[in-house]
Length: 91
Image (cartoon, rainbow, N blue to C red):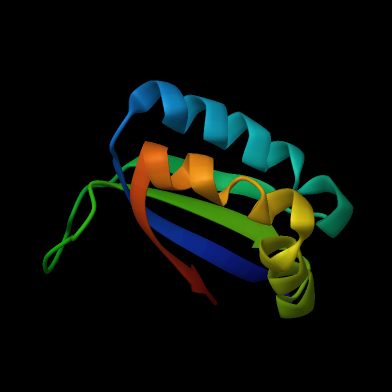
């Protein structure tokens, strides 16, 4: 069953966000992941802590976790922290 990593985010530095996003997308391939949506959100009910969201699809939870824990992605976390404030969730 497909699994999704949902990222709630607030940009801190748009240049670093752009760099991070491109580099992070390159790390998906070995885990068969891909963006299915990303951008500003429209709140239909409740409160949103972050104004943007990204949804990444993987074939299963194991692939999603393996991607997040991979050395290639972990190396990008310092850049991520400079570019965005975020929460990552696995569904």
